[in-house]
Length: 445
View 1: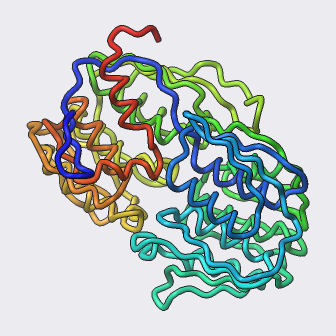
View 2 (view 1 turned 60 degrees about the vertical axis):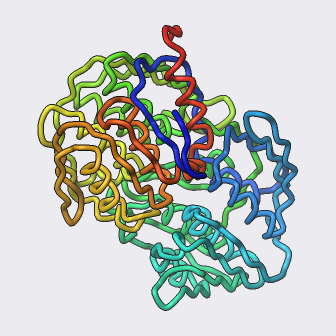
């Protein structure tokens, strides 16, 4: 690979993909572990492997909220000793969430219990994302929450009011919205019941139950919390991110000479839909036996992926989409390598991510030579003739990673990314792993 202007990177096809890779810590679990320990009784250490910019945003915001964090930085990550503060100090605060919607939405829920005013803001991209979704249930609980006229950030929360438990149906299947309501409901009077339109990640329920809350997923779509709840701080080694691992699963599924082991990955059943999808397309992907993590409530293990399969086209829509929302750009690359026409539907939520990911992916797939048609809520993709392309990432880490993988495996010709650095939002060691995987020919897996 070579570089051009600052932020640019040119990616070529790898002759072989092989090696053992450790993924950065899962963002979803990391955000929740930091926030839950911040409001728990006692001290605990949260271990983060290669934390990205989003997790660092949460760390900074918690410090602004008056939480004591003692941070030890090592070459591979952070050990963060959190001293919980169940009884928050008064005062007004302004939190910069940068590009992290998870930080903003979850902290809005957490801020309802912090006396004084909390303003949550972010960069121009985050200011375009919908925030009334989180404000509506918080108001129904009795919180005072305002957003901009457009229903976006900045969010202002006047905390310290007594909240009441509610029954609420989420407008979209979003684990972020569920967690925001749960964090607020920890201090409410009475039971809170939250229903999602389809199954969402259950990291919030697993973690808070492990820390002492009376919370449960009563069926695949409904969460019940008995409150008020008191949490006990617990140390956790946050496992590897399945969404980051998905990049290498797709790479191995497409590349004819690929053998990759991804170690220490979270194998939560609500996070491995990408494995099921790729297997349905014909990929060879195996799990090591998933054992409960010794340092946390999540199952953790290795993923082993082999190349050489001929991928079949896929029709994707309905409830399956929510479980794959972060991985859909990579799904688009797998579709472009399949033997036939694939289709994605019911993914309109992609239009309000860090970028309009439907428009961005369609433009990029067209640029690399795939045959693609944009749909209102997704796309149709068939393989074409791979060609060189300049890709506009729009600062979106998922887009940059997806088209880097496309180049590495030959779905595209040479690809020039305009902002390769944006991968640091979720996967700051991605380019290091590209170098390792594409040069470690013959490493045992």
